[in-house]
Each structure stands twice: as structure tokens, then as C-alpha cells.
Length: 255
Image (cartoon, rainbow, N blue to C red; front, side, top):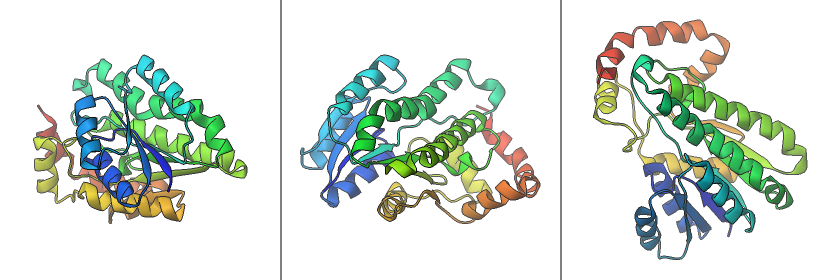
């Protein structure tokens, strides 16, 4: 049995991860900003796990969370909480840009740093939930893509820095997931473009498999996995494929 921290535990993917990891007899620390939703999730799992209420967009809450977790033994830290916004970059409020970087990048970095002494002591695992948009800069997701590129860079550097000290650091990048994070416009766009959205349960299963296997990097979904590799080697090819879709995407991006 492992003690596993899941941030963003009440989101679609977070709940699926919690359910799966609970079924494997792990001890969970469920972190989220909605206490009522956290309690409901915990009750659905038998009310045997710890819940911690924290809004990762708040530096005060983040510091308090780090203090609470530092006192505990942690086997796995899953940085899952995230914000997304679909739309034209010109229309995105500057405050939202800051908030997305705070939740998607700064929070997992600061939390990992605060817990690093105990994570190193216990030879723990840090699992950062990214996105295929952390490999492919996608139009109308400029800020979200930027945060996931940053999270991937942080994960890769951390892995290389602390591997010799026994810290496992993983980056898992799902494609679109059928959760409330995607609004009706996004769903309509994906349908017209023929994009696949995986169920949270299916994604959670692959994430946990990657966790057990100790995979350093994992992109979920095909052909997205292939496009991610091509984009790293020959980005012009991916440019051409995506640019053909921009007109359709812009139609849905307009609020």
C-alpha cells in the first residue's frame, strides 16, 4: 500500500484516478478547493482517506498545503490540478493567463520543492499530469500549451537532476479527455474535426499503468503520440496539418 497525494482530486480525471488507486488499496490524500465535493468523493470511497482543502491559485493556500503535507510520509505526489481555456489569445484576460500559470506550473513546482527533502528521503515518485499540448503548440490554446510545455520542461529537468538520488519523476500527457473542463464549444469543435476525447476512466488506467511501470514519459492516444514525435523532429509537417484546421477552430473559438 502506498500513500498517494492527488491534487485536483474532484475533477473528472482526479476522481477517476482516486477511484482506481483506491481499488488498489492505496492510502490517498485528496486535495481540492471544494470541500463539499471532496467530502462526497471520500464518502464514495468509504470515507477512509484524508482530504485537504486548498485553492492552488492562492499562494497562501499553497503554502498551507505544503506545510500540511511536509509532516507526512508520501510515496507518490500526483500533480493533477489544472486550468484550461479555449479561445483566441487576444480575448484571454491577463488575469486568466496568470491564474493558469499559477495552477498549472507554479503550484506543482512550489509544492514539489517544498516536499523535496521528504520525497528524496523516501525515494518517492512525482507524477506530473501534462497534455499532448505540452508537445504540440495548439492554436486557440496558446496559454494552456505554454503551461504544459513548461511543466514538461520542469519534469524532464527534475528527473535528470535527482535520478541518481532515487527520486522517480514522470510526465504523462493525455489527449482530450471528456470532462467538464471542455465546454460545449470544445466538444462541438472536436466532433467536427473528428478529434477523439477519451473517458477519464480510460486515461486514469493508462496513467496508473505508467506509474507502476515507472515510465518517464508517456503520451496517451494515437495519432497524437505520433504527431508529438513528428513535431519534435519536423514541426513544419505538423504546421501544415494544423493550419488546415484553423478556420474551423476559429469558428468555435469565438464566444
